[in-house]
Amino acid sequence: MCGIVGIIGNEPVAPLLVDALKRLEYRGYDSAGVATLEEGQIARRRAEGKLKNLASRLNEAPLYGMIGIGHTRWATHGKPTEQNAHPHATDKVAVVHNGIIENFKALRDELRADGAVFQSETDSEVVAHLVTRELKRVNDPVVAVRNILPKLHGAFALGFLFAGENDLLIGARKGAPLAVGYGDDGMYLGSDAFALAPFTDRVAYLNEGDWTVIRRNGAEFYDAGNVLVERRIITTQVGSGLVDKGNHRHFMAKEIHEQPEVIGRTIAHYIDMATGDVRLPTDIPFNFKDIRRICLSACGTASLAGLTARYWFERLAKLPVEVDVASEFRYRELPLDKDTLTLFVSQSGETADTLASLRYAKEHGATTLSVVNVATSTMARESDVVMPTLAGPEIGVASTKAFTCQLTVLAALAIFAGVQRGTLSQERARELAQQLIASPGQVADALLLESKIEQVAHKLAKARDVLYLGRGASFPLALEGALKLKELSYIHAEGYAAGELKHGPIALVDEQMPVIVIAPRDHWFEKTVSNMQEVAARGGQIIVIGPKGTAVNAALTPIASIDMPDVVTEFAAIAYSVPVQLLAYYTASIMGKDVDQPRNLAKSVTVE
Ligand code: M6R
Image (cartoon, rainbow, N blue to C red):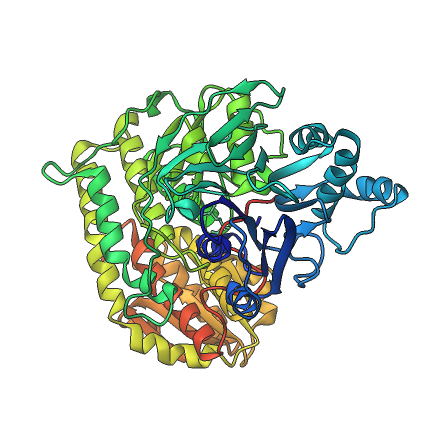
């Protein structure tokens, strides 16, 4: 992962590099660094931890160079120390890297044998030494980079700065995104258009295998065969303002509260409010009547949105759905055919495993449909059909509003598929669309339970382990609840299908174990209540999330009840996401954890 940036400007670039890095922190925040040319010599400032540490370092010891590169890191090889922070440099070249150099050990041994002295434990440092060695041979930075790129195995986006070269940056891309920005006051290199937005909205994306030579007066692009090529400059719609927290303490809180609005906006994009019919904003090059199965692939929370949608596609459109986490899908060698629709779900549209799965599907002749939040992302650009979620920028590492918008889009698609396949009558499809239209209101009602949920979170904050249970479309939400609690509070949590508990995990249940039961009034409600009895009989500390009276009617005394609006809807998972999110949010806040940037994580996982 990691974010990279480069600037050739007309003023000291270090503060501008830090500004751009702020916008790339979603790619990692273990450490950060910049390098500029000070009187022709490479000078670096690096710091362990969040970007604010680098900003303080630069305050104490400013840099004045008008050309430079910067990096924000998510550690892959080597601990997140200052020593391992990028840029990595020799006296000739500094390099920033996003990705993994898979053959770094062999290269490092070879370079050491040639006398190179390594200062870090990273895979990336080999790139600086390779270029330095090649420079001794060819004495030309452009030729040196061109010659070493084929030696690098793995995935990378690279940015290079050279001693004595005040008008030259080089970038290279293989398996990780990279864009060149054309500004009035300079030229730019960055992991994405968002990083470059404060400086310019005119960008050209490097294609896979491309490398670029950037000077003050423009950029040249070369393809993987070193042929000079044209890359189109486009005007992006990415806003230059940094999103702020509004009146909230954390981005996550703000994003949870934005859900009624963004889900509503997403619904309006997919449902014709006048007729109540689902309509897809783009033509799709297939008819669901001809589709035999869906293979859905995604990571983390996005995969759980997919798992939820499986229930909807199967129930409403009678269409079998296989769901794989993308890190498995990409290597499964799954046979695909023209009757299979491959479906990918991603907030960022840059997740390496999901992107690789999409490319696998394309190579094997399948139609690719992606549900993505970032419209300019690589997945959006490479998919046959793109269905945007209109969640707006999501900054908190924990996916919240992106998840519920993914559920919304997938629900609309399941209704659409049901109509095309003739498994839903027009009338039933409109009823279902109305249920979906009602969900922003139900989400708003669920948000009114916030102070109650905060009280319940005080109980969870004392727990060592927590179980989440759900059946049917609430089972993926149980998994999501456990994932949210783990990633934010570092409390061990597991999600189970409620009916599966008795096949083993029930042995864990005792008086210390909070068991959160997600029980909307749906097809599985009675069964879930029975499973709740089994937990109660073993002394489990039940927290019910369900319609008012669920526990009382079952003669249970839970430690807490979160009373949800009592509505019958196929799409209860959307509103029931809210208590699940708020429980994790408040538990982590009460425990004093960094809710927006939990340890060891990054918003966008661009390495496999
Ligand atoms: O950008 P994506 O939706 O592809 O990201 C997938 C996962 O990395 C992401 O959902 C992750 O699981 C979140 N941190 C969960 O809150």
